[in-house]
Image (tube, rainbow, N blue to C red):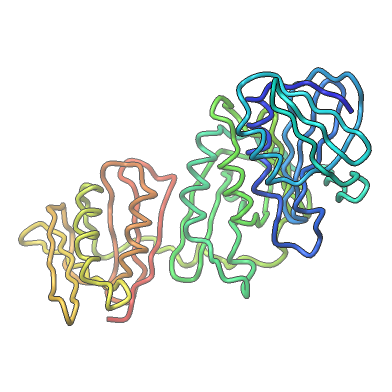
Length: 363
């Protein structure tokens, strides 16, 4: 193999796939990156057997070939090269890589040992605006579980309902649902949250649309020269829609930034109590207040003006509340609940595409 590519393009490709290559694995080949010529392009790929990341780089191909090389070493070497052309030459199981006065020989492994890159025969194809996809991922993966003992909760449910496509995730303590686009198809797929995090990371800024392909066991995201393919999680996601209150007895509408501010202040006094803060709505003062106590340090009550319908109190985990508020892009939100043990609902004002549910703590 002998190919010439620009340092910028090769560096971008290596950075995109590098995180998928696994250094902590019983299969040393998985810590390598696959380099392979394909027509007038260089394929750069990594896999950990759950996710496969592929990046195509435009190249001047003088001789076809393929090799795998240590992901971390080749990525860091190319990252430190000047912005000039980079020449890659394969000699047996060695990669000669150089640019101007910078030359290295990296010991590789023949690509026969590298896992076969996954293929997909899609049953469903969905085209999504890249900005919308990134936003939906950010708004839902925060509520996915990190507990591998319940694998279905570590994923984001991608499903169609009433003519729309939704993302939804829950860890049992909170839940987020985001609608994306209209669809006539019947879709149900449980995508690992880690896969979606990787997708959001590698989508190029200049790409307007991302194509999502689904079959019975895999999902693939196509974004320009990038392909991310992942296994789906096998299992039944909870019927989460039953957990979302249709209405709430108490609602408060207020500035998102103000609720963030008073929650952050209250959380400073809530560290001893696992982040527990109590929210109270006051119809007389038209306000929302948050109270927290630190037995050794003192206590705090912070207040924000709000449009309030109904009076009551509920105790929440301040971190969950802050993460929910951080996922809302609207300047104003509605906060609703129906008593101390009922789920709390956070929705952006003027946007019915997103809702975030937080379960209360027993005060």
